[in-house]
Every structure is written in structure tokens, then in C-alpha cells.
Length: 395
Ligand code: CAA
Image (cartoon, rainbow, N blue to C red; front, side, top):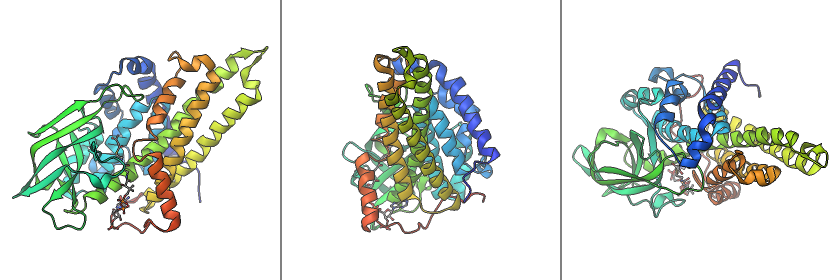
């Protein structure tokens, strides 16, 4: 067992750290206040090569391993959750799932654009009546010759207004498949597609979230990902990748809390000494350090399992569940350490508090991950190897 990051990992971490601090942090408060989202951030990330991380060179990516993706997510979220959400949706839920499930022709068609950022990808699973109960979706695809006609609606879709294409999970009408679901890549310019932004979110305010609608939207059958009946598995695979990026990002929030709190606690003087000398403050800092270090081990393990081509649904759920809880706890403590200054956006910790709350809901709620872990332990949930995995690394 080797816990060291390689020299290449360190370079990637440094690149993502610099990108976050130089390109994201300077206007993060203004963007959050104005709830300003645009494509500019996505384009900058594409230009910096960040969107190609963990996509093989054969498809225009950087050819780096899956731990690299985690490191990038950690450093991006240390700067701002909004930037990490782009990675979770574009790279995790969309591009890696295409890498896992696409035919060679489909990978050649879409991955180079996704790796360079010329194409932005998003994910459509959740519906107004199907959140945690993902199998209850009602968006329907009906086969018609060489195409499918799709009707329905998805909600809580990150990048709804900016993504060029969506990995869409639908129910299959008239199919005799055991699990009547299918997955498609849908171009937003397809007639019958429309989107609408959601406003007034508690956190991730500068991130675009919306609804997408399909009205008699006709999709060529060669845009189907996997076979008819594979749609639910494609969705669950996507969550294995998305949850990994969320777990790694959560460690970045804890690190950001530590950055802010160690600075503030050494500056702020009470009763003639910095509050960093007060044991109750030290207790909170120690707890954040504990969350950060446990969180890293959990996501490094998942990254390693991805590299090896091992099933990691259980471990990924554990990392996402634990790290997001610890990130919210760290942000709460960071507000506490800052006192009244933790309650105003002159300091970043109130934003960490709001943003970290969201990650306990999306990509599987706190309750879903609690139940999954109990069911694995009780033997009620299968953990058998999957027939289809990501390409191993090194390949
Ligand atoms: N990879 C591939 N296949 C998988 C899989 C995986 N990770 N996990 C399960 N499967 C397969 C299973 O093997 C099974 O196939 P077989 O019958 O052939 O064995 C099939 O899929 C069904 O699996 P389950 O029995 O586990 O299905 P379930 O109905 O019990 O799932 C659940 C329950 C795990 C709670 C699931 O509904 C779930 O994860 N819900 C949460 C949904 C979620 O996280 N939504 C987030 C949306 S995305 C988002 O939030 C991002 C954004 O943009 C904001």
C-alpha cells in the first residue's frame, strides 16, 4: 500500500490550486451576491485543461488517473463550490459515464469536445416526483423507427442553461426490458428541448441550476448510451463518478474553513491573546483537521479503486456521506470561530456554510447514504462486481 501522491499528482494539485486562487477567488463574493452565472468560468476551465482531467489521451484528454480528478475537485472547491460543481456535472456525471458506457464511435464523437471544453455536458435524472426514488422517473422515450421520441421534464439540473448536451435518463415505453430505462445524449439544440433557470437557492448561488423540458423531442437511436434496459445502471454509474467528485470537493471546503479559521483565530485578540490560544477554539480546529484527513483517505481509496477498475459504489457512498457531513460541520464551526463576522459575507465562511449544506442533498441525500450503508452491512444490497467499468489506469 502506497499513500504517497506522485510528482504528477502534486503538479495537478498545484495547477488546480493556482487556478482556483487566481481565477475563481477574486470575484467569488460578488458573483455569489449577484447570483451571477455565465459560461465564462466553464471556458476558463476548458482553456486551462481542467475539463480534460481523467479523460484518456486517445479522446483528447490529459490521460491522468482518477485520483487526479479528485485532487482537482478538492482544490477547486477550496476556492468555490461553484467551480467544483462544474467538474462534478461535466466530468463526473457526464464525461466519465460516456467513457464507461459509450461505444467507440460515441466516445470519438463526443469526448474530445468535452475534454477541451468546446462541449459542456450535464446530467438529467431527477424529476419533480423522482428524487431519491430515482426509479420512479416518468420522462418517457418511445421507439419510432431509427429514433426515439422523448416527452417529460427534469429538475434540479446543474448547468441547465449552459450545457451543450445532457446525459438523459428516461423510462422506455413499450419495452420488454427487465428494467425499462434508457440513457441518451441529448443536444440542447434539438427541437422540443427547452430550459428554465431556478432562482433563490440557499447556496451555490453563482451556479446555474434549472429545469429542462422535452416536448416530442426526436433523438436518433445512435445517441442511446448502452442498450435498452441499461438506463438505470448508466444512471447509477454516473452517480459513482459524481459522488466521488463531491466527496473530494467536500475536503476542499474543510481546507478552506481551516485556511480562514487559522488566519482569523491568530489575528483576533480577546482578553489580551489571540483566540487561537483558546482551547475551545483549538478543539474546533482539531475537529476540522480530523474531518479533512479522514476525508482525504476516503476519497483517495475510491480514486484508487477507480484506477483498478474495481466496483466502488459502497466506498464512494461512504466517502460522499462522511465528507459532506464533515464539511457542513466544519463550516458551522468556522462560523462559530468567526463570531459575528461569520454571519456576514465580508468573510467567506457564511458562504461555506450555505454551500456545504447543498452537498448533503444532491447526489444522494444524507438519508439515502445512511440507508445504503446499513443495507450493505445487513446483506440487503448487492456489492457484486459490475460487468462494465471505467478503463483502468494505467491502461
Ligand atoms: N453501477 C452500475 N449498476 C448499478 C449500480 C452502479 N453503481 N448500482 C446499482 N446498479 C444496478 C444494480 O446492479 C441493479 O441491477 P441488477 O438488478 O441487474 O442487479 C440495478 O442497477 C438496480 O440497482 P439497485 O437495486 O441498487 O436499485 P435501487 O432502486 O435499490 O436504488 C437507490 C436505490 C440506491 C437509493 C437509488 O435510487 C439512488 O441512488 N437514489 C438517489 C438518487 C440520486 O443520488 N440522485 C441525485 C441526482 S444527480 C444530482 O443531484 C446532480 C445535480 O445535477 C444536482
